Length: 212
Image (cartoon, rainbow, N blue to C red):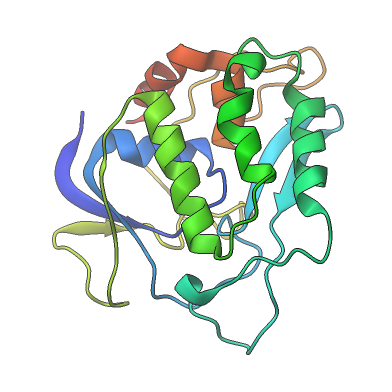
């Protein structure tokens, strides 16, 4: 399934299924480390499915100058957002089939304090890759324009706001059982947490079937 061309992605906090499908489809994955931070994107937010529907969890960042390089962006801890995020995750997924199995893998990220958003997200990606049993050739960019060729530039394509997301003919969300399926129709492209907690070892197959 993996293609030879590389893909360029933004960093992401517990990224959506579409984002993780790129790790199945592409042999080389480059994470943008030199761009300026963009608000209201997956760079510092994830979307889970709770009892009241999709819920965005946002990592607060330390305010600085208007343009801040993503690699220099620090996480703010003036509110207890880690506790809030974990309680929301527990509420949404404690009845899912694989929650107890995967709790220790993810809870650590909402107990320990990390300084930089990029480092935080990269360590999350490494854990997710381990659970999925994939070994992507993952690299960080050194320069905003220095990217591999041929490559697919998806830095802005995967977006939490549908009106800002770009068409992706290589992704079609494969439906799977969700905790609140009796209350909602299948909600596609949620956080990878939703897929992992609900499907466990079958998550790789769902990602593979989502690749067109």
